[in-house]
Length: 395
Image 1 (cartoon, rainbow, N blue to C red):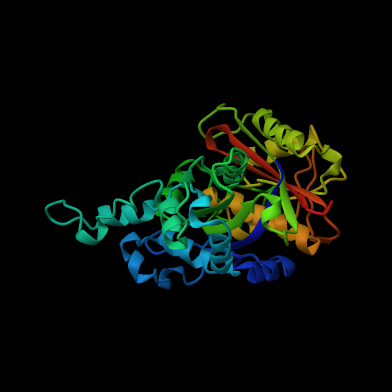
Image 2: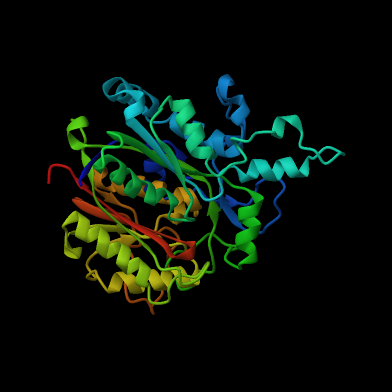
């Protein structure tokens, strides 16, 4: 079922809102910085959203305060998204719109803070008694509440594929008539559990991440959020793009290591192509998962080589944002939609010496060219894989 894409937006270290993100990509200016997160002494680079700490929630939602919800609120205010939702609610009714958010850690940063500030009695301080925050469904609860959407809400947490899988779930909800439109998105914010956890896995680089470079030595953790409206085509008359297809798989090969042959990744790609009724040659651009870890980039290159010709343009954009984990899928979906809209394919930032052993090459510099159909990959821990295909709606 082809679904129209309405308004969309993204906020990350690369910029707050679409205009800032486009400028960063166009000027090839990374949002990564030396780790300056308060209380964290890891020698690494991070993708931190500027001035996030000063964002205030609406007074009626003060009980939902957390860094993650500050980020969710900041992102929701960009690019006219709240106005778009208001019009959609007037058109369809607030109960005919769903909310599906992706996240990896939800508001765990707030939980960390709460446990470090226990009272002498070891009881939680009053301001931290927030059952709707210390909850994996916190992003879905918050976005539904702040947007006034009363249809079904869901939060997906499948590691790095979380906010790519929201598109697949939205498609199923709409096709089965559960709702007429869905606000999809993803939010993940920086916290100690993630930074030190990935460091314990020896996956964090002390340098700027270098996807697909032979010198790559790990990832940079970032934070970000993004949103998109999906609906049946007749409900969004001015839509430029559509979700043409999606593919999901769960190879469950290892808790943190992708399948060495990329079997799950290939299955997700094949299912997306089948649903879209496109051939691999119809895809003009592939936005790669491309984390800059040793295993991920090698295996993703192998997976692509099994399906795509060398002429297919592909790149990783994590050099701009860092790896935003549960928000990576939506950020990269938005970057892919922007490539369709502005006919500018981003190169792979920080890749200067492509790994000569890879079976599939990546684009290094930005390229201006028309893009009809584009694909984006998101591959998570535990073999949770998702592939999305977007295309021009008038094709």
